Structures are given as structure tokens and as C-alpha cells.
Image (cartoon, rainbow, N blue to C red; front, side, top):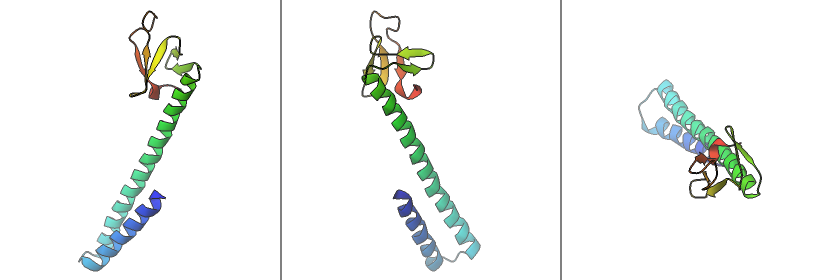
Length: 109
């Protein structure tokens, strides 16, 4: 839905350029193209960020279900780590080999 709003805004932008500026048609087309590219870049970035967020939340859900999560070369589980909800970071529990170690949930699979 957001991309439709972006396209409408770019269209309105082109109309404003058309009626209220003294730019040539080529310049107007270039400026509109740049605005369109910005909207498309924002859409692509939002899609990427949503995918990364969903992946991280899936890792957190699996950890909360007492499943082992693979983070780099480590196996993260409820026995050796706790989850900091505010930062979505796995923190090694005291009296374990991982004591004090912090691993971001975004770096896990």
C-alpha cells in the first residue's frame, strides 16, 4: 500500500514541476526520475528491514520454545544463555562456559 502512496506523491510532484516551474521537459523528467528512485529505494529498504526483523523474531521464538539456535559457531539454548528482550541479545549465564558472553539474536539462524 505504501508504494502506491509513493507513486501518487511522485505523480503529484511531476504535475507541480510541470505547471509551476520553468524547467525543460528533460529536466522535469530527470527530477521526477530521481524522486521515483528515492521512493523505490525506501520501499526496498523497508522490505529488507522487515525480512531481517522477521528472521530475528523467528530465532527468538525458537529459543523461547526451548530449541537450540545456531549462532556463528555456538549452539545457544536455555541452559547456557538468557535472552535480553530489550536488545534481543543472548547473554551467557553465570557458572557456564559462556558466562558474560553476549550474542545478538540478529546474527543467529
